[in-house]
Amino acid sequence: MEFLILGATDTVPAAIGNSLIQLAAFIVLLVALSYFVWKPLKKVMDEREQLIHSEIDDAEQRRMEAVNLKEENEAVLRNTQAEISEMMDNAKEQAKKEQEAIIHDANTRANQMMEDAKADIEREKQKAIRDINDQVADISVLIAEKMISKEINKQDQKDLVARYLQEAGGK
Image 1 (tube, rainbow, N blue to C red):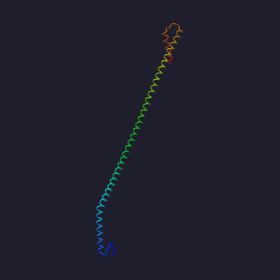
Image 2 (cartoon, rainbow, N blue to C red):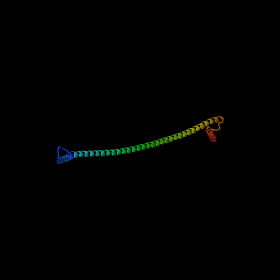
Image 3 (cartoon, rainbow, N blue to C red):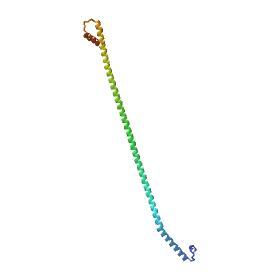
């Protein structure tokens, strides 16, 4: 049996003994490696795996927080834009009301001024007509005085001319 030649021995039982010793040494080596290398290595690997998982969880949590903050910011932005739009609409409406009020006041004042001007014109017209009538009456009296004899006094002539002017003005 030459297949078990592992050492310099010539016999099969010595080769089996050497093989058993080597097997025992291999098992002791495996146990020693398992205890001194594999367990600490596994512990380091488990800790590393836990660290990676916690970092992934933290990153996912930060991503979710960022998404929530983004949504909140967008909501605040939409609300702010809505408020600004509402404020602009209110300002436009207020400006339109003020414009209408100013135009109404201006029209009212213009109409009042026109009515006052018409009243002033009518008063001046009546005054001018009275002045003209008085002048015509005075002139008529002077003319009548010169033409008529002294039978009628001056006040009677004035009243007579005023009455004729009123009758002539009424026609």
